[in-house]
Amino acid sequence: MSELHTCPKSYEFGYSVKDSRSGNDYDRKETSDGHEVRGQYRVQLPDGRTQIVTYHADWQTGFHADVRYEGEARYPEPAYNNQQGGYHYDAPTEFIGSLTGFHNNAIQTPSVVYGPPRH
Image 1: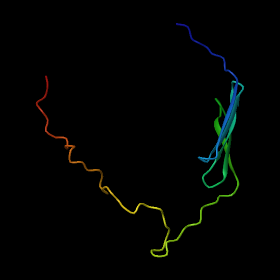
Image 2 (image 1 turned 90 degrees about the vertical axis):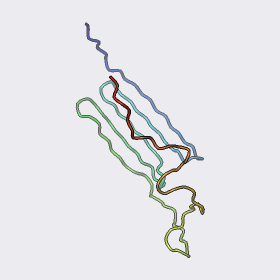
Image 3 (image 1 turned 120 degrees about the vertical axis):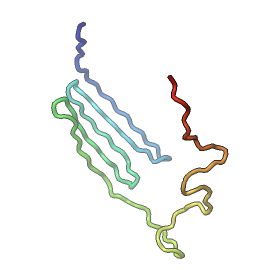
Image 4 (image 1 turned 90 degrees about the horizontal axis):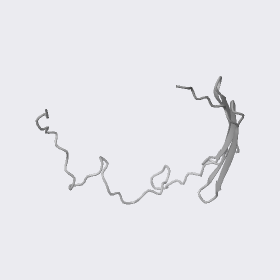
C-alpha cells in the first residue's frame, strides 16, 4: 500500500457581513502560505465595542491569538420601577405553564415493568 503525500497549499479568503437591521457586523480575513496560517476577524459586540482577534498558527507552535477591543462599552440605562424598586423588565403579565415542567394528561408515563428476558 503506497502512502499518499500531499503538499501544503497556500490560500487566501475573506468575507464580511454588515446587517444594520439585526446588528450583525462581522469581518474575517485569512491567508496561508501552506505552512503558517495568519488571519484576523472583527465582530461588533452587543455593548457597542468591536472585538478584533488577530491570530497565527502552525504545526510547530500551535494557535496564537491577540484579542483587543475598539470603542467603549455602553449599556442601556436601567429603567426603575417606582412601585417595586429595582429594574423594570418588559415581562409578560400573565404566566401560563408550570415551574416544574410541562404537563399533558394525554401523555402517559412510561411503565417500569419489564417483560421476560428473550433467549
